[in-house]
Amino acid sequence: MTHPTLKSGDKLVLASHNAGKLAEFSALMAEFGITVLSAGDLNLPEPEETATTFAGNAAIKALAAAKATNLPALADDSGLCVSALGGVPGVYSARWAGPNKDFNAAMARIEEGIGQDEREAWFVCALCLAYPDGRTLTFEGRIDGQIVWPPRGTNGHGYDPIFEPENETRSFAEMTDTQKNAISHRARAFAAFRKACLD
Ligand SMILES: O=P(O)(O)OP(=O)(O)OP(=O)(O)OC[C@H]1O[C@@H](n2cnc3c(O)ncnc32)[C@H](O)[C@@H]1O
Ligand SMILES: [Mg+2]
Image 1 (cartoon, rainbow, N blue to C red):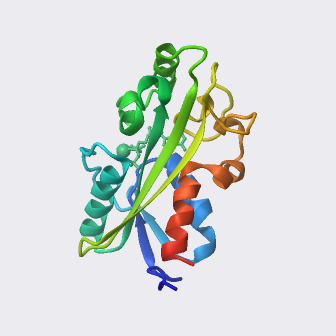
Image 2 (cartoon, rainbow, N blue to C red; image 1 turned 120 degrees about the vertical axis):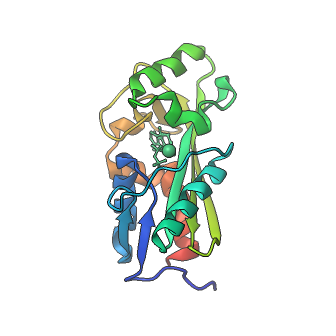
């Protein structure tokens, strides 16, 4: 039995500036009694995501936030990998939407790049918990599915309207937060984090 690394009453910085992710985390974290502060609340800068892996970028963000606040910090690096595009946009998922976060353009770019018969895609989420002393723990989650077109649904965020998880008939954007949080890449990574650090 491993000892929990975070307990009720502890403070944790969520090192993300993405409102959609933060909403999902607040639902996932609700039952644990941890005080969650977000990077936006704390005015933390957004470090450059220079790594070539999700885990590497999650560590960059988590360590930057932990060092800036002297508190443990949890960062999420995630993205949509499209098989017919060789796994792209992947770690470039945010950059494909550009500074104006134009996900309609990014989704259209994906659809234009793939054929009718090669629709496989998967979302990945890497979570990194970092401490001010530089220790890190990393967890990953993945969900497989396919790209659908046209985009469907108005819930969620980012690429949700064009991603239909396997064994589902709805896109992520047609699901409620609770439904998405039961199966998503983020929820799966969170389950591993929870098992190691919260339960
Ligand atoms: O780095 P932070 O501040 O956390 O916020 P971000 O939006 O830049 O996040 P990433 O660097 O991890 O980029 C992930 C991209 O993948 C998209 N993405 C990740 N998870 C997603 C999900 O569950 N549904 C839809 N899109 C998602 C998201 O919209 C981003 O464009
Ligand atoms: Mg980012």
